[in-house]
Image 1 (cartoon, rainbow, N blue to C red):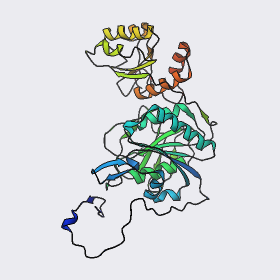
Image 2 (cartoon, rainbow, N blue to C red):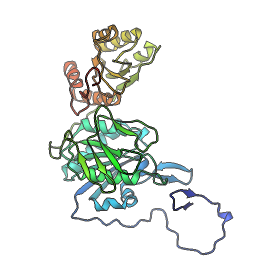
Image 3 (cartoon, rainbow, N blue to C red):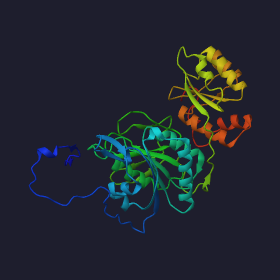
Image 4 (cartoon, rainbow, N blue to C red):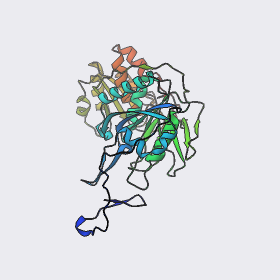
Length: 381
């Protein structure tokens, strides 16, 4: 397997080659040592896997998650000019295999790193579920330093890979003045700037574009210019040192997320009858069909907390405009404001992990805790 100057690889059968000159073979696993500057700020890299920590598996030809955090330092040499790093491999998975148990391990790992004096944390993560994880950590962890989630849409083996720029920009953001959990990814399709997104207001909006991530109903918290790596923060960004480190890592796993569609059987709703919580992604202002309202009322009466969000990306739920919404409120369904459905899911998992009193659960679900709601009016203005 040969690496070409343009970044692509070619494979050639050895039987088709004529050996002209032999040279020492570099064995896989043999690495050069990365020298770290003790005068730079100490940052932590916690690796969970994903494309940014992936390379080609020449056995199958597919991209596989195999890099450790130390491998990332070698793959992105410029990191050593931004900080000195401690590294931890928490998981080596593609993000579709993320679980709430790993979220808890991750929250504890970040908390330990921050409590032990690191000045910023970088979490490498696959992009498909990165927004879920960032939101979950945002609720579980109060942090006085930047906690930056970063991934890449294209692996290092591709000439259009975004791993180097995203990695360097995330490190600069982690060494900067931010004091909350955020996501740092390409802001445009060019290699000119990364956006800093609030963890509870960001969504992956494209399957493969490098600028796939967007802040929803708010402007990004800031940006990082490339290649200068200058960090710019908005007035809304929480600043470094605004809170003391605190960990609240209890989660309730039996929470579901259900997307309503026309003609959906109420039996699908009833499938969640033994769940402690259910987030519904309804149509428009937060609606489902009349038969599904009856099924949701059954869940509520049996002790399941039900929260309504909208499939629309912009605007907020308001169940006081139409009869359908008023019937949902009468059934005991909680309005989710303008929370993104996936953020509402992890928030409910977290709230139910902290509280058992129904009134307090309802209050917390409708309270803006981490900037996850309250971004727009009923009309989306």
